[in-house]
Image (tube, rainbow, N blue to C red; front, side, top):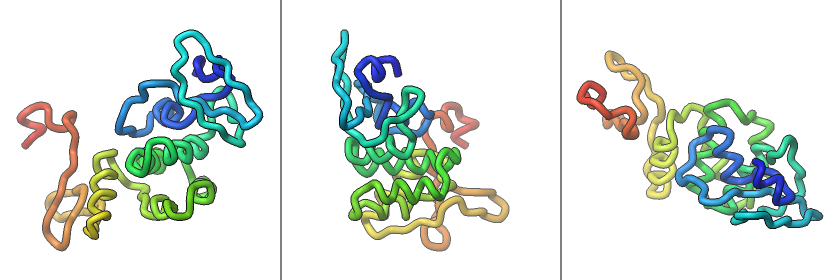
Length: 177
């Protein structure tokens, strides 16, 4: 956050999303700074800031999460945006009103991403799988209760169960079982 403020703006885009503890696909290599349209860049020592010009000022050294998500879509694309959006929804860091504001802020051709997002994604890998399969016309039932088994990540059709877990859930033999 200090670099963003030193630069003349506030923490924005991918840096703001990461600071909120949301799922991201790639660690930011540089600080993303949200700058007001009437602001002035102040390059500083070691400055490799990525600047996002915005009409919102932000508070407390950070852009709003809605502003940061809108910046993220333009900066890093649909997949990074979607993973972070579902994470924000899962953690209840955005509400329905915030989703409406976000939807209004992004290009019309990409608003379907907000409509497609779910509140119950358990990981960024789940979000990414659903998004990528949708591009191929494949839909999955998410977070399905299976009698005698419990809740599973996805069901394709009426019987193919897909579990999407990262390395932390499969480190030891017991976890892999």
